[in-house]
Image 1 (cartoon, rainbow, N blue to C red):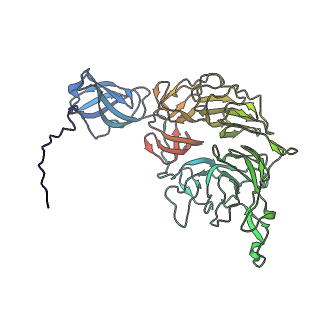
Image 2: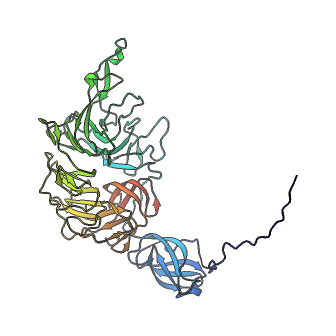
Image 3: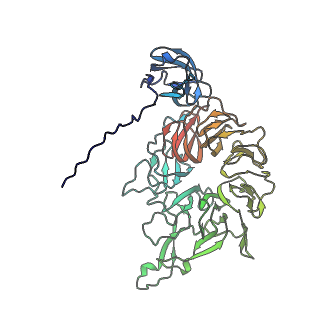
Length: 539
């Protein structure tokens, strides 16, 4: 049985009723002329329908208002404003009436000429699939990259895996001359190189991993730190182990990492397990968020099962070249108790030429003394009270860098004062901890600073999530003079997106300063990048 119903007529509402009528303004798809322009230079863009609104609109270059020089029925000429950076051009109409106010029409992007750009010979296209945490230069002129990535430049194959460490040349191109094999089974945060002694030239890696170049599940015999040979292979040796199956003589001995030492934690970490590794006077320093030193006790281990020996020690440990813990450093052998370290997380660290360490992060005490987010340890491991940072930072410090040429330290983070002075996220320090004379960093908005480092010429690279500095548009990246002012001609770049974890200064093929930036980076100067970019900084 079918039932019929009477259909009621419904009058539908126009979903666009009340909307503003189109004003007939249309930008051409043609690029601006010139396509690359400097501050003060006149630029021409094709646009129709704008002439009849003359005097009723403003034109912007990446948020900065530009002076209009000429307007015709099909083009507009304007002067590039001072402090302009690469980005879009648009017009916003306003005459005090509802049909015009705040109607915006977007035009093409305009590239601003300046002294900062992606280095022209940089050949990386696809970069890495996950963040790059560290970059380290080796004597050959190539660079080691370590991180969380599982591919680089989309070159991974089933027979040629890439796991968290690669060697690249000065162009960023993959160099397969080192034999990393399967790489690490966990994140690499730090890479260093031994430069003296019997292990000269070998590579140290640290992070959060338990094996290197192994498919065997029972090869879990690394505690987040290990040493590689100069050819990239795991530095190994042989040892006798307990054999529970005497009929199988192949399990009488085992191939093991030659560096038998490392760290781990009994709970959740408050940051990277091993953030930095250092090498000084034939000893290895590890800094991170661990709470015990670990070594494999092979005398009671079998071929398939390992027994570990643990020593409680937090955040900083020094080891001999064989991996054994140096119990004279931050550890009382008689009481078997280590110094307490911080009440928070260690985010970054550096080592000075005398072997002392400077640690930063999110803590307010260190070794039971008030230390706000920064502390210096003497070469023997105790707190250096002469390091004159005073009240320190009033918020977390996310990075610390040192330039041996300028002899300055730069710290960056989410703080608004340092040692009582109003510094909104960056502080330039002398090596005694005092603030460098004349340096100011008065205002930041739209986000925070996450990284800063000084170049050999004294200029300072700053990156983060901010969008304005000193009320001038700077979209996540800027170059400062050593007094904290924006460097003229060096702030032409557009949008930067991501977080820099490390920077390495080099010389470009043109003879200019250049830097590799690595981290979790997706955009530089409006260009899509994949965790690594090489930036040229002209003189």
